[in-house]
Length: 182
Image 1: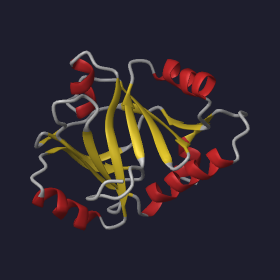
Image 2: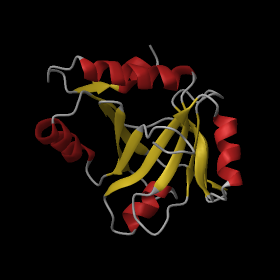
Image 3: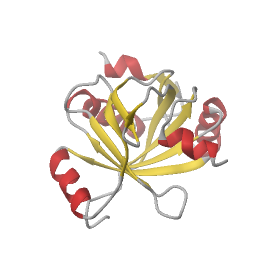
Image 4: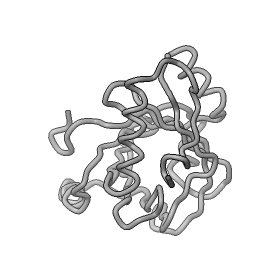
């Protein structure tokens, strides 16, 4: 548990081939079901202080209380994911903490001197679905994300976790949009 942000809630993996990554996590690791979206909705996305429009696929599943996120970027727009892949890396890119008190977490991050890498709003793009990523240290996979889990994004995350508790191996890849926009 982080003494600053509470329990770690997500491991975010940047992958070159999301289909192969899904197959590995489902068939080898046994984690699922994954909720997949081909083109992740983003709003007000900013990378290193400049607007950007990355397009990427996302798949979410849970193992216990930790969410697994698989991310494959499909264009060359600047983002932390593109930067990670362009360094020849694949795998764990970030760890995330979730909050319903986003402004307090932002203030804590600022007070600790963390440097913002990228930010925006995901999911339905509502004002209560903000995220921010902070620069990593000298080790790949140490980017910190703070994710606001209010509104529909919070509903999605709770649905993904609930599905994992009863998963029997059937229907391993599901349409995230059916949960997010239902």
